[in-house]
Amino acid sequence: MDYPKPPLTVAGLFAGIGGIELGLAASGHHAQMVCEIEPTAAAILREHFPDATLTSDVRAIDSLPNVDLVTAGFPCQDLSQAGKTAGISGQRSGLVGEVFRLMQSSSARFLLLENVPFMLQLDQGQAMSYLTSELSKMGFNWAYRVVDTRSFGLPQRRQRVLLLASRTDDPRPILLGCNENPVFRPTAESYGFYWTEGLKGLGWGVDCVPTLKGGSTIGIPSPPAIWRPATGEVGTPSLRDCERLQGFPCDWTAPALKVKGARDGARWKCVGNAVSVPLAKWVGERLRMTGSYDSSRDEPHTSGSRWPTAAWGQGNDVRRANVTPFPAWAGQPTLSSFLLDPLKPLSQKALSGFLSRAERGSLRFKEGFLDNIRSSISGVQLPLAFEVESLTRAA
Image 1 (cartoon, rainbow, N blue to C red):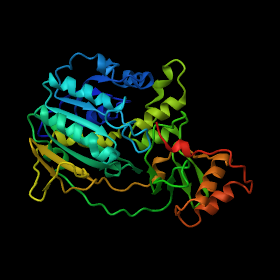
Image 2: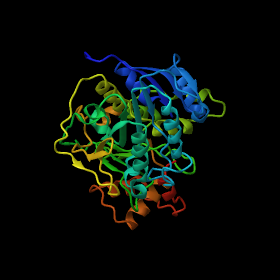
Image 3: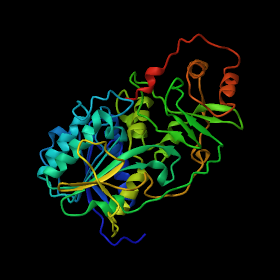
Image 4: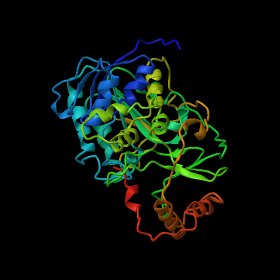
């Protein structure tokens, strides 16, 4: 692909395992610095980005290197629907304030923030109000958009907020200047669901998995399960396949095991918390394109009203953007094409717990699904000692 604009140099804060940096690199950009405090994630960054300066604590950084773009997938624990919902002032998510501190003295042209869409409604949208207010105070124009990972050829129903800001450039053509309205025609070969749900929840996907999560409040990896009606299989994908479902090469997180005491649970957490690589690649491509944005249909956003799924601001002018969560469409892959390893069968305890909750709850499932679960239990109905509702609260 020919790009009219040159690549950018990047400083990645809260870099995790490098999903943003790897995606940006695929479109020609180069990470000069990465910052990550989690030892297992830092070990992965050290292995895969040897040319980048690695720092640990964002609070200890005095100033950023001379780069074009600063990225920050800042902690979502206080903003997630599955987390503690402490809000933008929470101990973890509040660390985004360190990004603004560093941007005060940075000459970077762009700032890219990433987080969960639940922050648009939590506490009447105080998180987005804070972010956009701080950016406006520093003289940034900004635009944000909820983006669905399925836009980029991944069979994972994962939505994230991307917020792009700049003092020198218009972020609207980059983030809002393309739009798709895909028609899903799933093959129904496979269904993804959260086996930790049953009474309530949103974790059901046709030919895709629901959002991969970092784990649970009690430290147990809880990847979604997959049901294959043709064979009756019910199980969870391997760690390697979940890396692929996030757009990483297989075994990308293997360097985490070099950390003393690290186990595969740490790798699961790293994968679930990561930014999907193709999403970042798309942003990287847009940063190198010359584009335009037609704002003629955008309506003013009233202060205090609910934040929309996309908006932009220039000074005191804040408007709602008329775009979908699908800025691109790479086609619809089958979930099966991403599963190279056999599914790991769910235990009878897990199946029994899920079935008990499903039978007591009001969720509706595909015809034959619960019968398949009953069959998988092999007629042995265990006592409901394995209550896992708490596992739905991801770390």
